[in-house]
Image (cartoon, rainbow, N blue to C red; front, side, top):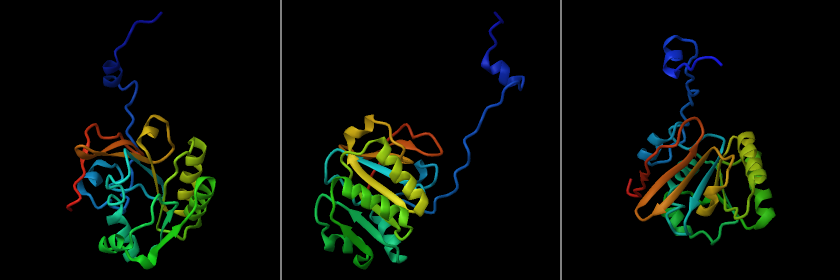
Length: 205
């Protein structure tokens, strides 16, 4: 059996080399929250990808997290599609957030129909962002949504219960919203390591 050689020795002797993560191009899709942008390797929402937002309960500002992005997309004339939202969107609140209702579409569907609609909208290339609320989505289903987002070059967002955090996911980004204290925690981000510390989630930006 050969002698044991320390890793540092191998590095010093240039017998092995240390890899570096590939540079991730700037997303150009700021979240609208500076601290979150700084924490993400792409500088914002990952382009053409599915992002999972895991929540403890409804009403934890999960929609407000996306409003700056949706405002910017609708100002550019991009279509924003909500598929199977758990409640009817309150139009005055969306308007007050600066989101053009003319760019907003709501598809009432549930179960497999909602997932099918989300996949088709993501794949179509006709939407700036697609929001969906899959309650029961396995790895295969999420992968289809991820691939559809890549194909259509669309921002995809899936709101799911925080209990799903223990299950693996092909989504490019996974984060949780915590209410006490109000903060975000990145569980997974493509192109880099998830930050170790939570990120303050201040809606007054």
